[in-house]
Image (cartoon, rainbow, N blue to C red; front, side, top):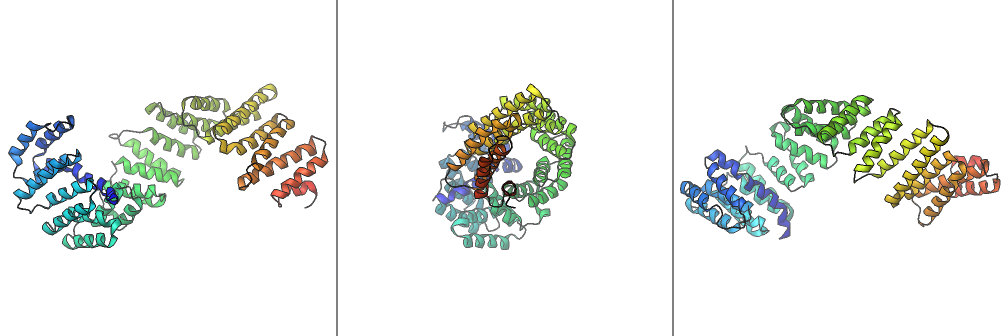
Length: 469
């Protein structure tokens, strides 16, 4: 039954937690020795033989220890061994140890047999009604097949264990299965003050994954205040503040992250910090933040581009170009917007130049827009429009071929979307203006302005040029 696969993650979570439970129960070191030996030679059925003998000598009548051992074998996909120790736990407990039934259900769940898994979980519920594990696993099996049956199991657990955080545990199960919509739904039923730091993190991440930045921020903010040494909660608050453009909150949480000396700092922490400083006009501090990010992660090439953007805003085109070209030469995943930004830096540089230097900068911009068109063909219309704009700054006649190419490109599509219409208006209008002012051909200018109105009957520039306002 393929629908059972979403349960696997939840099942394995319990298996993986066994060593921690074992540690608390006094048999942890012996179990860890078996686990280490088995993992070191997973294809050898006899691996850990001596360690297993020592473990069983002390724990062969301890059902909790036997289930923990079975869980360890389950994580290694040694189903027969896992099942054997589940059966041993049932035998020594005279079929009274609920976790053994849960383990047998987990084995079937991982093997993708939902019917058998549910049967074992039902037995766990009947034999050990105060144990939440059987109910939660049973509900997981039925959540998609029969939500009503899943709800019945959870309601019964609430009756048996009113102290147990049913909704938080259900939310956690959905979270581990990456069903963030359902995780958020169940977390929303919980009072924030009842959730531990890990569940608060899961709740905030679920909302963040769903694009609900304000809700995620509120949860992360609460968690960061309650658990100030948990930088993951502070990071979640910072990410959401960034999405909400709450730059002062970004700075607040970034500074808190930097103050927790026990926690490793990440290059991304400084990216968010630098972004907020840039938005608040603190350009020098933004550059220092981005540089700190590079010190932590020298291959985080996007930081060169981010610094280039700050230098552009500061009017230092030469430094911006140096950093942008460094980024372009190193990064493998250059974005269209970054290529366009590099072209614009050359345009801004040209605005401060004259003569041959100005022409050289503009030609470089033309070349870069050509690169944009070649790398990202779906942006060819935008690139041609920008090339016409740049070429006009060199010589108005140089813009004509770009406008003509743009018209040909857009008309070849057949169906015109809003972007195509905008490009045609720009190209027809540009040619109309050129022939009216520089080409000494009023008839041709009129022809192009009329074409503008065919695309956009309300274009004010074309109406003015044709005297039809």
